[in-house]
Length: 436
Image 1 (cartoon, rainbow, N blue to C red):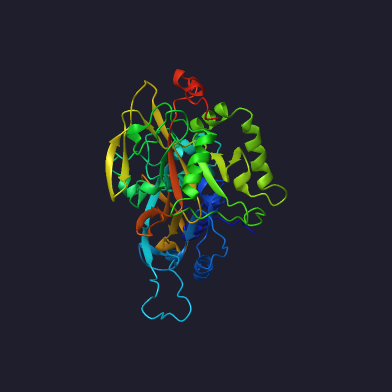
Image 2 (cartoon, rainbow, N blue to C red):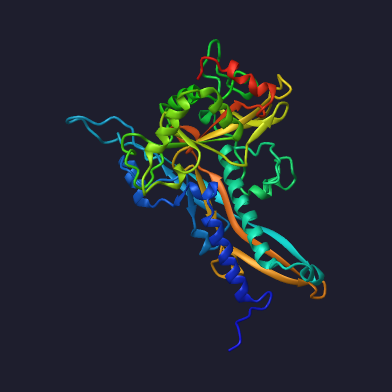
């Protein structure tokens, strides 16, 4: 019996490779998949309004558009009732509490990437299976694209880091708006913090223009900002992991910091660093340990702090960022200070439940496959071009809560973060004296 062979560009080959790429991207130990959960149901919303627990993760995946036509999906928020009770025989008529809701729309769009395997002589000169290599390369490209879209939306900015890992260009690129699909919204005023809440003579700024080299991220800053955030009028909903035995008494939140912020935290924490490491290990150990707790992480003030590998939302001195003010959602561009030659600001973010919506659509020519693989013979059939297409969109959840526009599940912290090994970096211990 002859072996089974699939011709270049056949429909069957496209389906097999499309499914393989989607499975690979979804199973990667990526930023997106580490934080993902299923879309909440009506019952979950009802349980939350009752004050009961429901399984919540920071990134919610919505698959509705994989089987329905359309380029957007709407998500709704139902606010809790907070009116006074009507006591005794007092009349209740006309004293009903208003059921308030707000909505957010998430758009999806098609993204494609293509690789050229070269001509016949390229194949002749190599012993490698270029189709397999290109599949792996496009899979990695798609995974980074999804991660970066999630990161940018959560952070409310792209920043200016431009390492080889970045697929999404900086915001000044003419294609940026199309690539991110949904408008990148700067953090709402009540979800925006600066690492200048502790230390002698330090006054917390209300804009990035007020941050100085005294604004490094430390454990005491995490203490102060965490307390402010959790006691606010609109606190973050905590993350609920399966088999987390401490969740009932110790709500969990996750904070992602850049490599620079992590190095500064470790440098100024002293003996407290080992205690924070031990607390993270204790929170979720044993055979049911969640992947979120694997790798480098510390636990402080109920916040799991993790290093964001490879990526940074970074603003060098003299660059611009968008900010919201206290009275309006109108964004304005502000300039990052440049008080020293190495002045730079990195953005960390604290994530709670249902912070981000990830919506998928279908590639119409290939059934319900979300990722589609295509091969074309070009140059008079002497070369093969291979492309990958996916239809999806990402947006953070933002609602009107208690009359205030609020990023539902994420808050950001901007901090002074010079490059490791520089004079500015080495002076941080002195600048952070008394802040542990």
